[in-house]
Every structure is written in C-alpha cells, then in structure tokens.
Length: 400
Image 1 (tube, rainbow, N blue to C red):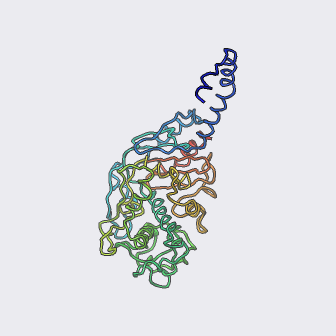
Image 2 (tube, rainbow, N blue to C red):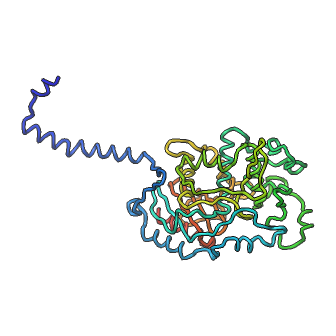
C-alpha cells in the first residue's frame, strides 16, 4: 500500500482543485460541525475557576446590564456591618428571644450574573463567605430532595412515622406530613431547642397566653412563615438520614459541583442531638436566631447552576429532575411558594422575566435567582429587598 501511494503523484492542476475543494467545501463543513458540537456541550466551571465572557458575545445588552449592576450597588441594604444589630431590631420583641448561633459581620454589596454557565457580570467581593439568612431554606429543601431520591420517605407520609419521639405526638401534630413542613403549612405546635412556635413572629396584639391558646389550623390549609418549624424540618431530616446535614450537603452537592471549602452551615449552642450514640448538631434554616448557612457568592452561583441544569453537573445527576419540579410547584396555600423556594407568577411578577423562574431569598437582600428555561443564574447580596424585582427585571431584560 505504501508503494502505491508513493508512486501516485498529483499534478499541479489536481493540487489546485483539491485545495479549492478543502477551502470552499470541507473547511466550512468541519467548522459548522465543530460549532454544532460545541453548542451541545454545556459549560461547567472547574474547581477554583470560572470562565468570564463579554456580555455582547452572549447577545446581552451591555448598557442595560451595566445600569442594573450600578443600580444594585447603589441600593445596598441599610444594615450595619454587625448583623447582630438588625437581627435584634427585627426579632428582639419575640418572647424569650436570644441569638443562639454564630453571626458574622457582613460584606458589601456583591453579585454575579451567569448565562449558559459563563459569568457575564460580577461586582463586589464574590469570594467572601457571608450569612445568607433564609436562602438557607432552599439548601435544606435540597437535602430533603436527596432523602426523597433515596426513597427514605414520600412527601405525603406523616412525619410521626419516622420521628418517633414526642415531637409529633398529639392529635394535631401527628397529622403533619413532610410536604406540610416543606411548604410551611404544618401549623406545628410545640417547643424545639427552647424556642416555642408561637413566639416566632407573634401578632402585634394580644398576650403570650393568648398566642399559646390559639386555635390550630388544619395542616396544609394555611401558609405561615415560621423559622421554628423550619428548624423542625432540619431536625426531622437528621433523624431520618442519621448523619450531619452539612456533611450530606458537602459530599453529595457542594464537592461534586466544585464549590469552595469556605462555606459553613451552623446550628445553635443548644441544638445538639444524640444520633446513634453520637452528638450531632441540628442545623438551622436561617439566621433568625443566628446560625444558618455562611457562603460566598460564587458558591451560591454554582448551586444555582446545578438547579438551572435540572440537577445535573458534568453529566452526573446529583439531585433528580423530578424533585426539582416537585419543589418548585406552587403550594395550594401559597401559589408563590414551593418547597422552600419562592416562585414567580400570580401577584409576584418580575418584569422582563418569565413566570417560571424560582429563587432563594434571605433577610438583608440575599437572593439566588434561577431561570431554567434560559439557563440563567443571578446572585444578589445585600440589595435592598424593595429593589429586588427591579434589579432582577433589568438583568433579565438585558439578557433577552
């Protein structure tokens, strides 16, 4: 074969014809095939790296995006750096209130916009770990999703089947299902880690005695935001999974998405629980009483990108698409709330955004916004909550 090839000599004319064919036909076809293949491959940032792209390359309105970033920076939340002050100002009126978990000083306004996996805008210190308050709840929901994926429970099961101490005893509490805890419609009555359910955001009128004697609502019928009951979900998941929830989050979510090692998830000084002879801290779903998730903006964005990609990271299904759909379904008692994810639609409309986005939200203006349809993730830190929709809408319009 080698001798035959060697003996075949191409004439100058044939060489010219072959060159023209490659230039006009083969090369464009190869380039087109390569471009198509690249379009099918989703980009995921590696550990310690994240590719930035110019907004105009991604078809984004750069001028509007820059205005949105400036607007976010100019509308920083009016909180002191010492976050114990706004916590006490907000919740100090609650009977017996005290800060029981770690609280760190906050950073300045920060954020990142991710489109199709690439960072197209960022501002502030995006590597500083910060308290994220109730955005922690969406991470707790994800832990519940892992348990659900593992077949440890069905959302319609009564929690009393799994948590066999006195926590869910009684006619009312024994009716509560996992779904009731997840969409905050349980109206659980009791005390957990020295915190009474009725003392969390009590009415402006009445007395503690009257609040304790209130009529309980049928589980599932009324939505009520209550951090004691969110902590109850974390406690119940710990009882079922028999392992620290931060360890589960690290091993099954944060390490696989190549998050940093700077995030922490804390509980309270009195929330230690005996699990199989080992004392494990039950974590909190926010920083109402201190504790909760401390995380940087980039790690938030990685988590958001995982959810935007239907639970897949670099070909691995870390959490099921079915759970994400279940967790972002409107609750009967509140169409703008799922399983600890906030939803758009109904009365909550973000101009320029679809009605299918969902987001994590925490006190002080901490947000992780996810648009699965367009593969967009927006993380905002310390933006005035009254400006959240406007900032997000400007960014969404810029990306359109």
